Length: 219
Figure (cartoon, helix red, strand yellow):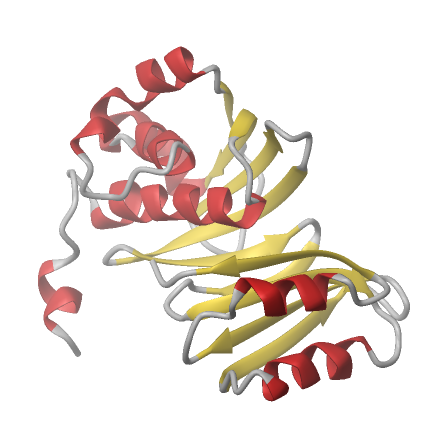
């Protein structure tokens, strides 16, 4: 157990789960989109839906989507800042049952027209997990350098991508592949000891059947 498991993260309060965690989910969603979001629909579940006003969960989610960290004082004014920057935000509460009480679904549209939908949960102490990307069940905590591909589930795709990483001397610490079905949409999450250079990302993006490639820095 580390000190942050006891005292929590540096943040704008009041709750490490409902405020800091929410901000980090929003920031992770923005990073996965890889675009400036211009339209966002937030659906909150469980305790997020019950206490979002009092704990500033809504403000924190929007702050993260604007690119602000959990300790950024602008979190308090995130809705006003979003309005000035042209980010349309719609928030709705759901009574549907979820596996975790601190759950949010974020549907985003970017300035360049890209769309993305993620589901994130706040685990406590500011820690988070992205559990769904565009309908595919995933597990992503944002604690390492990460490369994410969205691709069609065809033979050889994973081998081609990992060969490029090996040639570039990028050490893989963890890799998982999630798919909705055979030959259907799939998401590959590769955690690495160092960032993947832009030229290698471009090479991976050119692989047939890969629809998008995203790289993330540790949060």
